[in-house]
Length: 97
Image 1 (cartoon, helix red, strand yellow):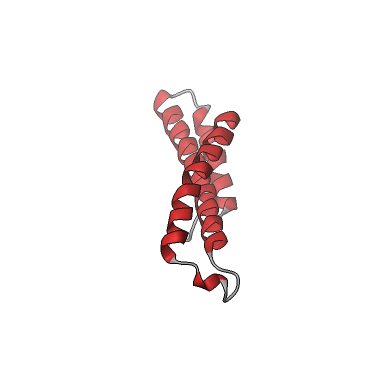
Image 2: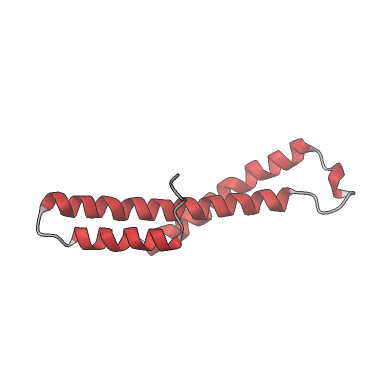
């Protein structure tokens, strides 16, 4: 069974990608760049998943009185907040690249 990618494995892939991207052969450089692109995408997906889980946790009622909140209201709130989070994330990720 293949283990999940943890931070050490992602760092190893990043090192391989960097090494291959500096090779003299075009095909090997392309493979290195592809590995780096995939590692970056995996990291973005981890952030997206973390943010989504945070939104879901925030929508969970804290006490019994809050448990009376209707599911439609919760899904409506999540639907309104999700685009704001995506816009904020895209603004942050656009600055780092």
